[in-house]
Amino acid sequence: MTPTSRLLTALAASVVLAATSGAVQAQPQGPGGPAGPQQPDFSAALHLRPEQQGAYAAFKTASQPSPDEMSRMRAGHQGLSSLSTPARLDRIASTLRLQQEMFMRYANATRTFYGQLSPDQQHTFDQITAPPTGRGRPQG
Image (cartoon, rainbow, N blue to C red):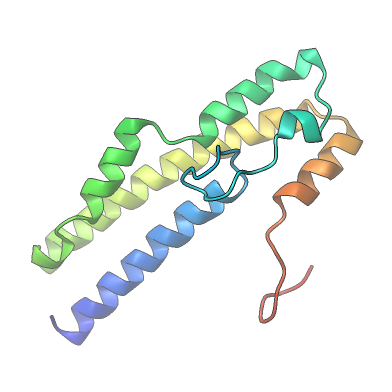
């Protein structure tokens, strides 16, 4: 593998990981789910009212990749090293399009759910879903 192809593969992998980790970070998951340890139960943490449960259900559904999407993501990563550079770029572009679709579904459902929340609930949601701050990361 040439240095350029290594760079392209590493770049593609980092883009793929970055794109999916941001969308997955705030997703409610069961113990040991794709996001690791159990995430907070937004319904309990936000003290959702019955009329907010529909938007919450849509948010939860949009937060989870479908089995087909997961299969397509795995297939997109397999065999990259055996492809020609143009084919590799096409495969990476296809995976990025899928991730963009998944992210937009998640973002739209999150905005709809967030819009149903009171200002206090929004503040709590913001705190629960904020990325961790740490050394070397911009604060604010």
